[in-house]
Image 1 (cartoon, rainbow, N blue to C red):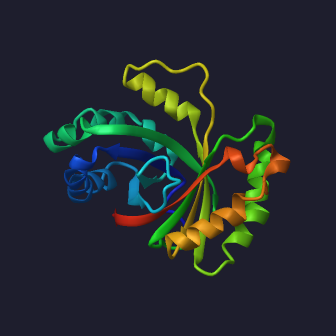
Image 2 (image 1 turned 90 degrees about the vertical axis):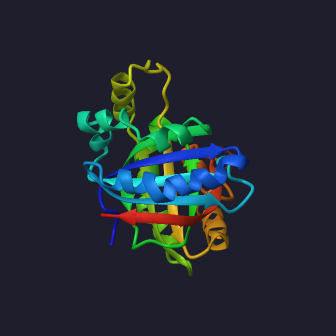
Length: 228
């Protein structure tokens, strides 16, 4: 089964080590469930870094019907009405980053216990060709590897980002660049590491002005998920 929609919220979060126990309890016992039952949301999964290459220890995905669900007035209103526990834990974040993405390539199949994550900024003039190469050549070959069950390409929607910032009364940066993510669903983090190397190593994407050095790649364990 593919993803549950074409939109996705992806968050990257960290807290100090002394707060991690409460952070994880809050995330697993309250936050994921709250988000899954918001309008347009379908499924959520959260991950823990499995290697020291990861720039951020935790990331989470929230699948939505469309990316526009992530700037809808009802959603923005609910964001401003956080529970007391949410307010307490969110104040402890030492890192928080969010992307409101559209899935443009969906080769997923169910869900697995680990993931490979690649983050990068494609060159404007190469996006169409890069998307085509990922969809038709690179990712279909990668998911043939043992233990690699699926893959998707996620593109940050800057219009949705801008609308969300405006709704929160925040300025919209004039120099925003579009970030892309590729998530590989795998059986173990070790499989994810090898799959990332096959997809992005050895300057595979250099013809699209995307050298390996420009791709942030790391492996994660899946720790929790829920769905409607």
